[in-house]
Amino acid sequence: MTKHILGRIRSKLRKGGFLGLCATTLRIIYPNKASSFNLCRELINDRSGLEIGGPSGVFQQRGIMPIYGIVRSLDNCNFSSETEWEGKIREGKTFRFHSRKEPGHQFVGEATNLQMIPSETYDFVLSSHVLEHSANPIAALSEWLRVLKLGGVLVILVPHKDGTFDHRRPVTSLQHLKEDFECQMPETDDSHFREIIALHDLSRDPEAGTVENFKLRCAMNFQNRCVHHHVFDTNLVVNLLDHMGVKLLAVETLKPFHILAVAQKYSAEIDTNNHALISSLQNHLPYSPFPTDKLATRKLAG
Image (cartoon, rainbow, N blue to C red; front, side, top):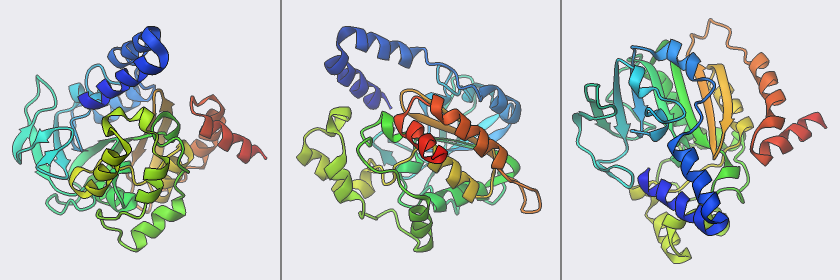
């Protein structure tokens, strides 16, 4: 996370000069809170949850969704005992997410296979900028929902393509994600790498280095998990969660590159029709800070 922030600051200094750097730095230090935070506070306060890929700056006190300070307990799962973001990780009661909270249990395992965790264990599941790194997002979401209790809350953030180095790539289709799930796509998948290497905007990703360095990083993706297999806009996030059968509670877009969604797990007997929220979202899209959302609105209107 720190490396990512420093990379953004260096990039902004090159592009926008000192004033652009100041604006970016202030937004990082004093970000606007997500409008759905109050809703999450009601649903998550003093409850026990699991994070995938934490700890995450967005959930800390100065983040856009400062959840860490209000939870009773929080466990975490990372894909490896050593990651690009957190360095070395040790399983057990080692997940430190808040200075005044007891450490949670740190699991090491794939986000698509949480076999070490019994079903319906947690009141909520958090994930910030993890889903795009999975070769099989529906498999990942299926596991996250499996370990979530009925009535439990899922809070996810994914990057909007327009705000990231993915802005040249096409948005992934829901059908593509379904096909990846049906064929049980493994995390070793490299089918997107040619597109990624051709369209990745290295000027927005200074950590990637040269083209040759970036190619090497892609080739080592199973070890480092830096690649964004799939590309999201707001419509895809909504349609994906609707496909998963959850009740959508809130969806919002926030600069510089966040799509934030809050959903609730219900039994099959309870109506989870999301038509009203989807209609509301489509009315919101013209006000999204991301051009792809505005374009989607015009297509829907046409």
